[in-house]
Every structure is written in C-alpha cells, then in structure tokens.
View (tube, rainbow, N blue to C red):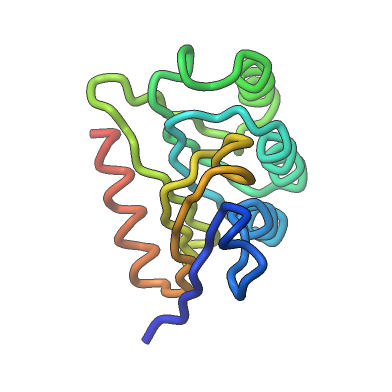
Amino acid sequence: MSDFIIITTGEKWVGYGFRSFHSVVSEMIRSAEREIVMTVYIMSDISVAESLKRAIEKGVSVEIFVYSPQVTVKPEILENLLKMKKEFNNLLIHSIEDKILHAKVIVVDGKRVLVGSANPTTGGMLKNYELGLLVNNGELAQNILLLLRRLLK
C-alpha cells in the first residue's frame, strides 16, 4: 500500500488542507540522501535550481531529463547547470529533443515520487492552479525510473 498526499498550487487551494508544490519540491530536494531524478519541460524558478545545487554539493546524485534546454530553461539557470556539470560528476543532464518531454516528475532516493502538472517556474510553484500527488512507494518509484531511463535508449 502507498502513502500519498495531494499537492497543489493556487491561492484557493494551498493552505486549505493541502501542501504546496513549492514547499514539497524544496523539502524533497533538501531531504534527498542519495539521488534525485527529475524531468523538466521548462525551468525558471531560481530557488529550485539553488536547491539542486546544494544537493549536488553535498554529494547527492542529480539526474535531469530536460526538453530542449536551450529553449525552455532560463539562460542563467542553464548556464549554472552546465557549469556544475563540468565541476561535479554527480550531475547528469539528458537533453530530450526528438519528442516533447512534457512530464513533470521528481523521484527521490528511489522511493518518493511527486507527479503533477507544475513546472519548476514561479507560476508552477506558486501562482497557477496546479495539482499533483506525492507518493511514498518504492515499487512505483522504480517503475517511473525505468520509464525515464528508457528515453536514453
């Protein structure tokens, strides 16, 4: 059996018994001990990038599947990620360009999964009406990791 909670963004949803994407994403990245695997369609939230940098610096393996990074990742974030990739061997960035990668998922330590509609942008993390599920289930997490890594073949 899985434990899951509903995650939201939007002023009429957050704070009414539901946790926010921003706080859950921050918590997941901060609490990671071994590995963070995530997909990114668009990224412009500096705080998410800074949280990832701190995780990388403490030795957590970070693997990012990104759709067309030259277009969808804010230039300063992309520049910082590429610099970190040169400095740290525990950062992998996979560019998916042959098909649109629109999934939004984060898997932490192969056991916790956040799946939802929010991109790591200010709108997705704080402003829009977004909905997702945080699931604690190792089997589900492993299946999602298998799906993501099939993109590399």
